Image (cartoon, rainbow, N blue to C red; front, side):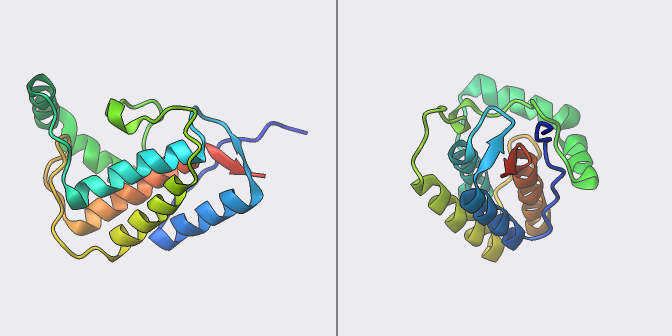
Length: 158
């Protein structure tokens, strides 16, 4: 029997994300990356809430670095992600959105489901990203779907 391969995922709706979560929970999964389902849900939940609730304020040196990165390549990277529909593996993220491997609280999955529904139904303002800048609701939602597909592609249903 061959080793499972990373999935080629593309979500077009938040309901597809929820259906994928259902499948991973019900069938179990092979973990091809560093994070399990709970860790992924914690991470994705953090990042999905930020555009709706506001991004955490970083210390001054990090804010300056993010601002410079936004000026130099943030917008072009953002458009590249939206056009390609994918993110590169191994991109850095905020340390506070990386959760320990011993994360085993199933509540994280429930919380993430609620946040997915919030984002799906959100009609309010979107907070500007410290790296990508201003974006409209449609772009923010597309970015979230791409982010979900990126991470969930490392879990293969059994």
